[in-house]
Length: 451
Image (cartoon, rainbow, N blue to C red; front, side, top):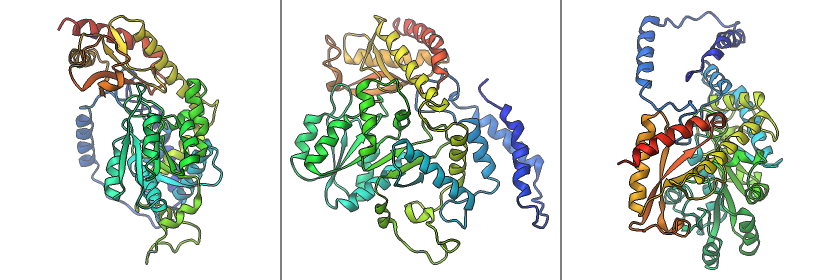
């Protein structure tokens, strides 16, 4: 079943309980035209059929993980109130729930004192982190790896902060020697460390970068939008576990609950280790912050109106599935990791394929063997299309040939990039479906190689 609906049975009960909290108010009838509403909603359902089957285990392409039913229900329930988490006037309960949810996220990184809030996504969260970095290190550069998310360069352009990129090694991680060359120039204010690149899931060498920080005095911002929740797991490679053990030492962290955290879009989060950076957010409003002397979330956020529904959904999910090591949530992440390892091993053992690098988290990148980069790219696209015909939905990624030419010996490098196949095995169900996924991939590859 693609569309889970059993949980809807409790939704009406929850709505009735919510309404009891306002039973002293005068009766009010919204006078809805139910027939018209039904007609349009059914049209919406028809239009929405024109989508890939993102919740299904056979969808193993992009970073699309379905929200947990508790998150969907809590989000929808809150919409009957429609709270705004900018100020307590707009969302008393949801603001408190956001603060509690943020405390739980910060606890994952062993931060007791912190400043943070929910954002509309990783882009806005990274913007706030780099905005703070620019205020603390005015005029100095922000640098990130060439495999870091493109949002960092765009954000720096918006903020008028100078930016530079650092070459990567053949594991798609920031190259330390190249980093040292840039640091020697003395104009670097912030190093963005990517904890799970969106292309390959690679994790930058944070431990060594922290050692360089002691020498050069830059800030470290961890873009853990994709990989941050893997701090709860134990089945990573030792060098990757070492990176996660260093995360409490960075200056700021971005993590996206709408990726691995089972939340609807958009739910990102920015966290600062030093609460004193809140001084840069200080502002006043002639009509907003009067309902409480306590800190309003709008006083520590660049965004103004923000959906309280995101906080309600995240808080509810944390109540059902605490974000703690050894819990159900962490165990499900470990299943995704196991699925990636198993899938990578199956690919490595098949003479038709080449792997680009071993998966550090749950993203697997591979390609069909061929004589040249152009032929590899052509066949990758053919397998991608044939897989979709078999209800297996993969993704494609373009990698620079300089990153993998030492890995794929004997390949003719007749172009600067090579197109590879890519899977994000984010769902714990992927572990149970790996054999069926493989069967579809095997059949698709057999068909594509006939082209």
